Image 1 (cartoon, rainbow, N blue to C red):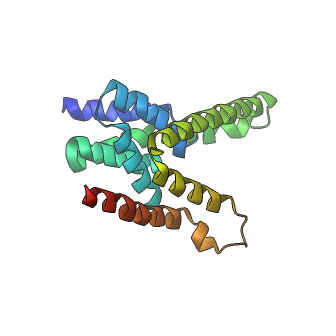
Image 2: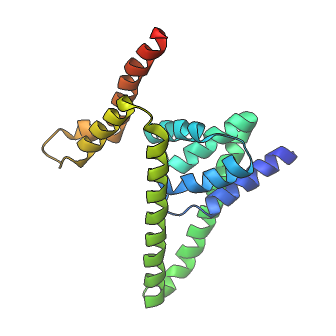
Length: 187
């Protein structure tokens, strides 16, 4: 029972201190689950994050489910997910009840501007850490540059299916399988 409560409260902290979704969750995951708890590695986070991007649902919820499942099985996945969702759901409910009354106040708009700036900084920090962690050789650099380049091409020039994050992740996985699988087989 103690382990499940520890899992719940760890993900309550992750959910409570994650603003901006997506990439903004990674610094909090790093602090709470890698450094403090030692439950996972950054490489596992990147693997879970990749899978979370191509599965339905919110990335943070999916990542929480994967980590909870790794720690304590299916019940752990459920508890971790509930822990992650609980703070956000509570904040949204409170905001919905209160914000309507205060949304027009300039101070509220200024606060949201500050929050967006902080989230952008956290996302940039995460992207830099991710790039440093995965660009270990020329093959990974080429995959990175091709995917990044395709993502910058304006809509209409290439089919939207090719620009889809799901397509880019799956194609990159396939290319990585052939490149790194062949290197491993040769050794």
